[in-house]
Length: 239
Ligand code: GDP
Image (cartoon, rainbow, N blue to C red; front, side, top):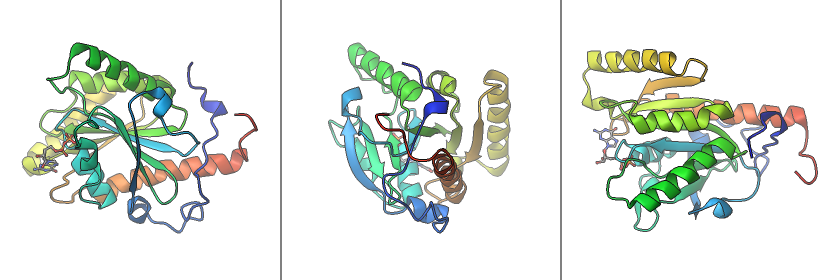
């Protein structure tokens, strides 16, 4: 089943402060709470709360980025507890919107059958999850755009959703290396994914750099959903 963007009706679970425009981007993400975990499609949470997904190669800095964006040390590390690393973990914001921590890919010691299950689940989640409004893709600033990053973009792009790339651990690069990494990735993305909506920025969880910029991107995605659902009116019955 393909996504049909014009039919999407995504509404936050609770009438939010964001809808009234009074919640600034940083506060929007604060006080996120662990909601649930899903190992297959039937376990995904029901409802129409908009979802922002986070993906990236294992060890790229995804958990640290989620913790920095929500200002909750340890929030995403909950996803790393044994048994949960291969699950999709959901965190709920006060507005009702969800942050979705997708399993880190590229982890070597995973049996082939499990790897296939996960690739299939991730591909389906990115292509078909109607609640998804955007993807934050975390790349290690020193090794950006791996084969699996490209694969993730390929899975998502037919859905026509925006992607925001965090070039994480940017503190490991000097100033000129940072600018070069940003420019090289910008031109690679423009060349390889010319029709995609991909924005990028430097990010360091350790130094808290780039946090406000990333929060603003997420807040803008959620605000756009609010505006769309207000224009389109309440969801049709039975949808
Ligand atoms: P994940 O596997 O993608 O969730 O990555 P983690 O967030 O667990 O980070 C992997 C490793 O990179 C850990 O040792 C982190 O402390 C380190 N790390 C994460 N973010 C940063 C950063 O911004 N700067 C530096 N220097 N190290 C980081």
